Amino acid sequence: MKRRKLEMLLEEVESFQEPDVILEQYSTPATVASDMLHFAYMKGDIEDKKIYDLGCGTGILSIGCKLLGAAEVTGFDSDERALNIARANAKKMDVDIDFIYSDIEEVSGHAQTIVMNPPFGAQKKGSDRPFIKKALSTGEIIYSIHNRGSYDFISKYIAPAIISDQYTAFFPIKRTFKFHKRDVERIEVEIYRIINEL
Image (cartoon, rainbow, N blue to C red; front, top):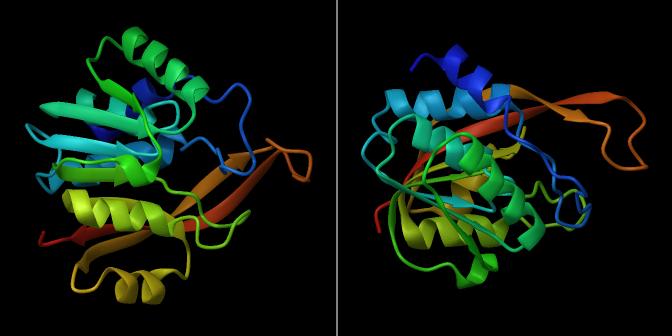
């Protein structure tokens, strides 16, 4: 599947109805999701793989993985309302995904590939760390989205795992909360591919 076709399909995914600012529930834009997942697909990390989506929200990354031929996809989130939307999205897109209600610390098992858009830590410093730790304990290859300028910290934090690839992208955030001043704020993010030897 071409990246543009994937993006068009992912634009149909419904977002949060009542996003929680503390959980930093910003929807992953279809542009960013399709870029990252198509990159992962071209690396051989999606098709026929078992995949975990940590902090899956309304399921855009999970759905994208399944559309690209993942063998098995499980999305984990601690917000039941978001999971209900994710389940409805998966049904609408006619993909079979297991969505599980779970705090990040409680996730267990093993996946060949992890995809995630963890909190950036804007509301609570360090809130991305439990996601990184869990990814390192459950996955072999990890794709993760972070604030631009995170490379040095992430590189040290994940050692001996390594960042094999990275690129920057614009992440448009629509006006979601009262403190947002613009209709759309475009922030720069870094997307990492991490190789982890469990």
